[in-house]
Amino acid sequence: MALDKEKLEKLRIDPQQRAGGRGAGRLVLVVVLLLALAAALFAGARWFGDEPESRLPPYEFATASRPGAASDAVLDASGYVVARRVATVSSKVTGRVEAVFIEEGQQVEAGELMAQLDTSSIQVQFDLAASQLESARRNLAETRVRLAEAERQLERTRRLRGDKLVSEAALDEAESEVAALKARLAATVSQVDVARRSLAVQEQALEDLAIRAPFAGVVISKNAQPGEMISPVSAGGGFTRTGIGTIVDMDSREIEVDVNEAYINRVSPGQRVVATLDAYNDWDIPATVINIVPTADRQRATVKVRIAFDSLDPRILPDMGVKVRFLDATLADRDEGPKPQALVPGDALRPENGRDYVWIVRNGELERRAVTTGGRRGGSVEILAGVAPGDRVITRANVELNEGDKVRGDE
Image 1: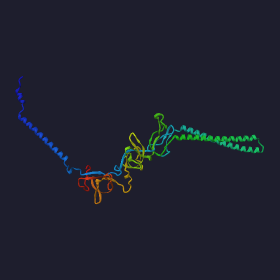
Image 2: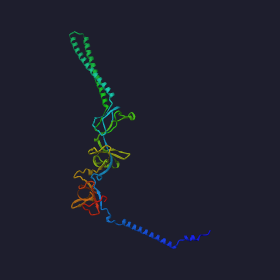
Image 3: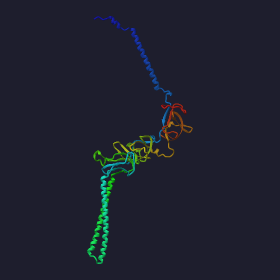
């Protein structure tokens, strides 16, 4: 097959066009390299060189903290508010609930009636015992009357026998009658006592059907309704209740925390504690260690510590989560002199003419404020007056500070 020379000629590349394409590619490559070099030089200058003063943040801030917080703590732990006296109140006997007199949140006094069980069957037995007691008492009264009459008859018989007017047998019969009535009187007295005790048993059975509060407290749950069966033991499957309700002695509230056994040496009875409820995380509650339970949990390697509130508050509820800070004894026992209001870093102080000043940010503006200082705690200084916890103070400034300067929130 012959080659088409005309078509082959069209496929040939002109040498001038080839040279022009190579030149354009080289130019693009040079431009890219120059741009990369410029970027590298700029980045290196910023990385290795000194940043201009204008790019540094103008201010560095710190927040004044509350004394007795983490700066005073030697150990932090978490636990729960517990009540030492809490009881689910039940009956002594099995019976049907006739009435319930409690509701959740109700305050009850010791001995107050919480519920009443059905008394119909016990009431019948009580009435029978009362009737038996009354019958025994009547028999006793009759026996006493008959004995008095027999004793008078015996006295008359003795006088007649002295005058030889009656026989010796008549005297013996009168004496026997008196002795028999005395024996019957003693038996009747015993019957009265037995009837009285039987009535007391039935009276106690009636009282056992009245469910009363064992101590003063607050009802936190109501577990039964009228018409349900209740028993002191679990019986009858799921159809028998074992309690009327649960009450808590709110005066017995305290804190229980588990402390890692590796740090239990930092805790001692009587040690001051600051407690913070999870529900009120801005409320510091003063407390004191009651004791350290003398046993460890081998599974969790912890030791239980009991802590008492210095004063109870209605907001403190059982089973609330709480965080505690065990305070340094040397700081907690220091009672002399004024108490510090806040803690600020030492860099925030600016002495001038024998006085100490700090710069604080108030409503977005700088304010120069004189402060009264106390002792030092590490790198912090106690402020006795002039700064409150939560105030923002300037610890370092790269610009000149002037009263009333505007400060942005993100600076």
